[in-house]
Amino acid sequence: MTARSATREGRSWAVIALPAAGILCFLGVWEVASRVGWVNRIILPAPTEIAAALVKIGQTRYFWEATAVTVQETVYGFGLGCVGAWVIGMGIGMSLTFRRIVYPLAIAFQNMPRVALAPLFLVWFGFGLTSKVVMAAAICFFPLLIAVVVGLETVDRDARTLMRSLGASRWQMYYKLSLPSSLPYFFAGLKTAMTLALTGAIVAEFVGASEGMGVLIQTYNFQLNVAEGFATIFVLMIIGLLLFGLMEWLDRKLVFWQAKH
Image (cartoon, rainbow, N blue to C red):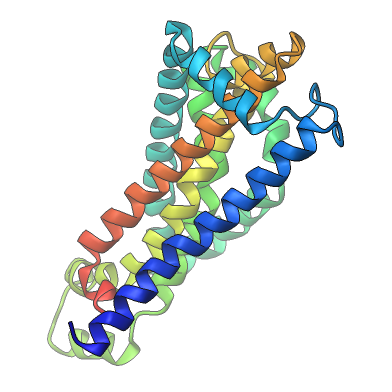
C-alpha cells in the first residue's frame, strides 16, 4: 500500500467515523438526559424507547400501508413538479417574451405561503391522493424552476455563437448545448426538491387526509404515544435520505462529466 492510498483510506474512514461518533455521543447524552429525568420522558422519550416503538409499529400492516401512501404522494408530486419546472424554465430561458410574462408570476407564487394553499387544494381536488400530489408539486416546483433557469443562463455565449454560425437550429442548440450545460444545475435542484416534495406531502396529510404517515403522527400525538410519533418521524428521515441518495446516484450516472471534476 502506497502512502497516497493509505492517506485516502484514512480520510475515507474519518468521513465515516467522525459523524458516527458524533451521532453516538448525541444519542448517549439524549438517553442519559431522559433516563435521569432532566427532560420529561412524555415530551422527549429516550432513544431506546423510540427504537422499541419503531420495532413495534414496524410489525403492523397499517404502518407500512401509510408509508406506501406517503412515498407514492411524494414521488408523484415530485414528478409533476419536475415536468412543470422543466417546461416553464425552458420557456423562460429560451424566450425573452415568455420570461417577461411568466417569471414574475412564478416569483409571486414562490413568495406566497404555499402551506396556506393546502386547504384550497383539499376543496379543489378532494381528500384523496390528488390534493397531496399537487401540494407536494407546489412546494418542490420553484427550486427546480430556478435551477433550470440558472442552468440555461450559464451556457457559454461563445459556444452559442459558434453553433449559430454553423447553422444549428434552436432545437439543436438546446439538445446539444443548453441541455448538457444546465443538467448539473437541474440535478442540484432535484436533490433539494425531492425532500421538499416529501415535506409537501406530509403537510397536506396534516391538513386533511385519512391515510399516510402524517395521519399516523397526528394520531400518535393525540394518543400521547410520543415514542411512536418520534419513530414515524425517524422513518420519514430515512425515506428522505434514501430519496436524496437516489438523486445523488442519478446525478453521478447522468452528469458523469461533472462527477469527474
